[in-house]
Length: 291
View 1 (cartoon, rainbow, N blue to C red):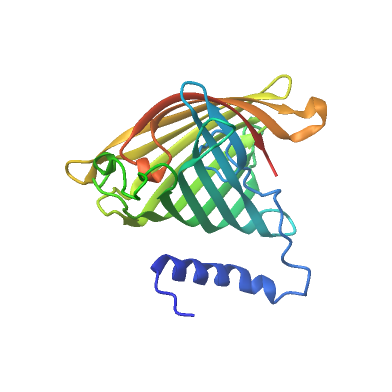
View 2 (view 1 turned 135 degrees about the vertical axis):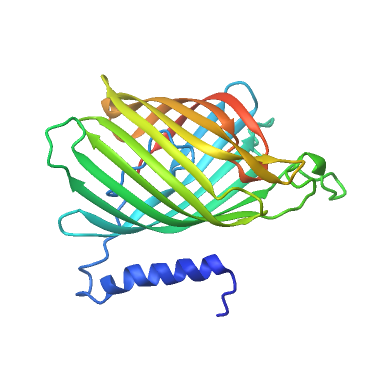
């Protein structure tokens, strides 16, 4: 097999390098895939791999997320893990007769490593967890972007002023979380070492917090400092903050410990790669299943 894409080569090398020592151990004793990952998924991060559906209250749009992080290997003491991430983020239109045409979709896959340790402290936050990811994201337009003759609609509104265009990015992401007793804070940095189109700043920052509340409820906030795409200069020459604030409740009272209902308020740059030149503000209600 001739693999030409540089990221695919990098991911395959990284995956083989990370997993091959585990495969040489006693058969059946090293690799045990688990959704109970050492690095717990960030609740309010709209780009976290998850299974969920959320409908926007002020427009006929639905977000459908399908994916999950999986630890392929965890050390005996649960202080180190190697895993994979897979995710799709779809933007659906709410049509008549219970139809949901797919407007745009993003795909993610990658490999990761996690380190976890207890801190020698009596403070509220007594556990440190760090996750390093190497990932690829590609974005695509789907339904409703062509007329009856197959001609693309409104190409002037796209980031490059034309359709179709290729959007993908490969990046390294490092996130560290401090947690304990129902509280969590985290800080992350992402470096994109390859992007299409070019001209996108490689740097972005992330920070957030989560607080457990009574009655199995919680409040979480995720902040990202992201590059802003300029349609005129065809590059990113500024940064903008993007917030997602989420209030949720786990359905523990009816036996659904892994399910939660959520309300989000989002403001900032669209998470859909094909709309990297657009900003959005909306409130959504939804349902998320934590594997």
